[in-house]
Every structure is written in C-alpha cells, then in structure tokens.
Image 1 (cartoon, rainbow, N blue to C red):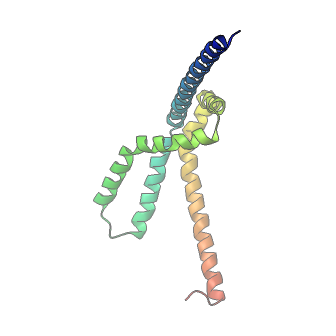
Image 2: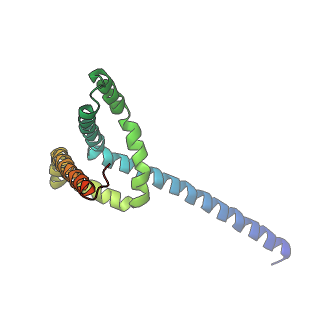
Amino acid sequence: MGRRSLGVASGALLLLAMQLAAVGQEQAAEDKKAKQDDIRKLLILTGADKLALQVMNQMVASMKKTMTGVSDEFWQEFMKKSESKMKEMIEGIVPVYDKHLSHEDIRAVTAFYESPAGKRLIAALPGITRECMTAGGQLGQKWVEEIQKELEKKGENK
C-alpha cells in the first residue's frame, strides 16, 4: 500500500470513528432522557408531589401557631403558590435521583411500586408521614425542654 492509499484509509477510519462517536453521544443522550423520564414517572407514581404538599400543610399549621399575627389569607395564598410549584419541585428532584441511582435501579423500584405491595405502601405513606412528623415533633419538643433544663442547671441560659 502506498502513502496515498494509507492516507485515504486513515481518513476513512477517522471519519468512521467520528461517526461512531456521534452515534454513541446521541445514544447516551437518549438513554439519559429515558432515565429522567422514568424518574419523573417514579416520583409521580409514589405521590412525591402529594407528600410534599402534606408536609407543607403540616409546616404551615405549625408556623400558624407561632406566627399568630399572620392572616389566614396569607397562608392560603402561600399554599396555592406551593401547589403550583409541584412540577418545578419534581424537576428539581430528578437530578438527585439521576445522580444516586442507576436506570436499572429506577426501573426496579418503579416495578415494586407498581406491584400490589408497592401500591399498598404508597396508599399508607401519607398516614405514615403524618404520624412520623407528629412523633418527631413531640420528640423534638422533649429534647428542647431537656436542653433548656440542662442549660438552666449549668447557668448558661441567660
């Protein structure tokens, strides 16, 4: 093979390599989009948006007790704004799941949540979350009281 033939062959190989790289990049982009779509499906399936609103409602109820000068109208408007931002919240969570879980993991977890046991768990999660928040709040209050007593005992609560 002459130099000219080697040059043509090298050029052809370079062109082929560039085409394969482009196809690989396109496939990677399609795979990433498919994974992110599956993450969105999982978040909606598990009711992440509804659980977030439930937590927000409980936080607002708690804040109302300590911020007694704030009108109910303000809190209602705040919750309306929060509800309208749930899609934005989901989009903010997608990269977190994408970073920590493989596409295979997302598919497996989704399959679980689509199973009868997974559906029962999804149905039970709002009650579980509510009860955990209540228990956590009570425990937190107890800890605050213990800390305050300890500070008073040591004369550091001035």
